[in-house]
Length: 149
Image (cartoon, rainbow, N blue to C red):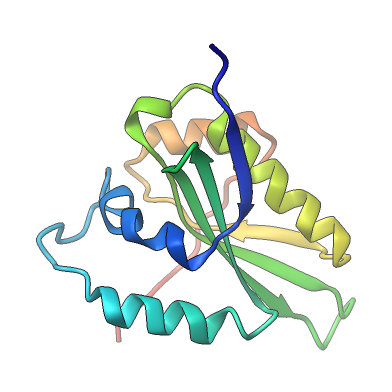
């Protein structure tokens, strides 16, 4: 029997499974508990802003993939949007089945629909499988900087 995989912008009902999915292969403190009420409140607030998009991948009602997308606006050069991606996750049992590639294709199509110039994302330096994945689907690797505040 063929599975029915659905990729769409996230609905509030998808969020109950997100904390577990988020913590798979996470380098931070995985013992931090999620404030579900706060997560729902933040999600509902952000989704009122057209510059925040969240992408879910579901197998029936099981959340198997997720990514946060922020639309940034360039006011200096081409005045085209730039997409920044955060928290791309694929359920461990669904890796190497083109789920990640499908998420990225969905986001790229969204980017084209708003005339975005490019997509930027970060990846931990020691996450070689993710780095290989991004290179394989056509992303160029350059290093940036960050600072915790």
